[in-house]
Image (cartoon, rainbow, N blue to C red):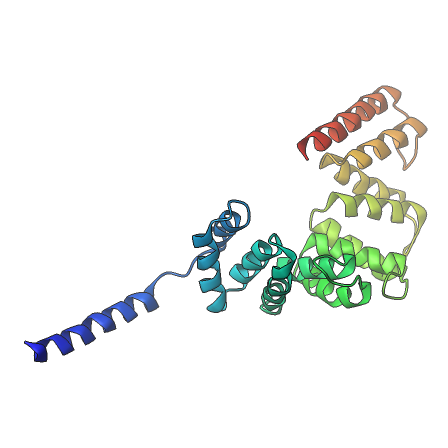
Length: 244
């Protein structure tokens, strides 16, 4: 009886290992949902699952685990930052952006260092992360941690705008209107201002209304539409404030 038990146990173990190896890998949506459960609901089982996926080398899980740990007490911040670095090194653009911003602003116990933040923001921006491209553009435009370079700032404003960031669109419009880092162009300034306003960005709606009032950027004066847009900008600000 004992002689049969040994091989049977080995077969069961082999089947279990094969089943584990063939288990489907979690998708990003599943991992991020687990991250919400770990970060906001503070579910220990969710945190444990993120840790298991992270140890297996999943960069999205590493990022979500980092975010969960960074919401904990300060004693867990170094561990969270370590996982965020691992995720960024694993080519997760969101992790690179978050690490760049934490470094730039001095969050989670880090010393503010715009120069050290730049490579992380650049990594994320080159991967198509619009918010990172905007943050990088501001570094170049303001000379924060890098030498001021209007052309480099404009390049990253264009990347952020093409990625759909309305704040970048507004800043790009202003750059074309004022000729900062490029030749002035009313047509391009109007194009990007309209694009930002179409995304319901309050400051862009207000700027478009003022352009209508004053007949700027090649627009015909239209006081009635300008008044309607100013009211819309106020409502958008009110809605965003209440949504916080």
